[in-house]
Length: 423
Ligand SMILES: Cc1cc2nc3c(=O)[nH]c(=O)nc-3n(C[C@H](O)[C@H](O)[C@H](O)COP(=O)(O)OP(=O)(O)OC[C@H]3O[C@@H](n4cnc5c(N)ncnc54)[C@H](O)[C@@H]3O)c2cc1C
Image (tube, rainbow, N blue to C red; front, top):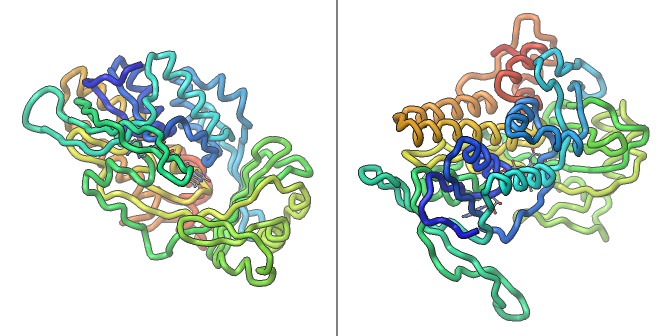
């Protein structure tokens, strides 16, 4: 399929958020072109679970049944403070529709989205990189003109191949959506900051995926410490994933540095993590789950997470969604799930503006609502409040709790209230 030079919406970035935005637009009868600088889907498996709200949105796109076949249902969330189990919340006590989390690898979601897009006649134009755009707010129907580079693989010497820009094309559109991930070009071209939140610094997580022995729990377990938030996700009855927040990543290497492999990530070097590290972290942070350290380790890695947010979600006819606008830690799987909701919010608003010539006030509202949600998640402006009857562990851990809740939107308030957070 040829990339059209004129369209109603150009979506830049074919990760889950960009694909979902394109699908929602196509469902609403909006002409959409979807481009990505990669040469095909990266088939990532980073984000591992879908919130109930995401399931509702995917259901509306006819995808739920397929996803349920490949996912693992989790019905409740348990909270631990170190060695003590403090509380549990059943999703059914928080919402009526689809009251569960679905553990599903991100690449499985991406495959389902791309298949559904193809059914709607939308294909991803891989190897097309956004290089620039201009907004023409004062004239013409097509208010944005984007410049795309068509990339081609080329031998760049020493037997190494790379992707180089072969030609440039221009695409005129009514709206441009930047769903181009944490290194977003759209954000940079809008001149938006991507400031770090707070002074606490980045979070580094040691992630271990292992066989479950005995069978993995049917709940997600959040473990709060003095300066850490860890999480145990059941991936399947026989597999689970531990993510431990490290206060001193380099400390891991102290006793057994010699001869250990190193993992290089974003300019940092982390030690290779093995089952000794997992056993030690479990003994220190989650002594109640000793037996789980015995399952065979499938893989492990140290990953750095930042907390960042744009000052606004866009301008005029160019808007951001997903990791292009925000980054956070992994415990509550907020980045992708809230990103999917942003895709939905953008899609219906853009459809209204394009089809009914509604005023752009709808887009201004998008910005204020999205900013409000992330300011709340990050506790910016007003600190997290607790109810008068909140137990001591909630009072002690309130500032870390919100981004650890694996729900968003109204369910976030509902689950927060169940444990004593006031919204
Ligand atoms: C290393 C890593 C680990 C992670 N671990 C977790 C985790 O444990 N839990 C969790 O919840 N989340 C995790 N995430 C985040 C999660 O993967 C994202 O929230 C999710 O991918 C949704 O992102 P998105 O669609 O907004 O962007 P992405 O998935 O990043 O997709 C952006 C797309 O835009 C394309 N693109 C970029 N620039 C251009 C351009 N100029 N022109 C055209 N295309 C462009 C890219 O090729 C990419 O395909 C992790 C992310 C990373 C990078």
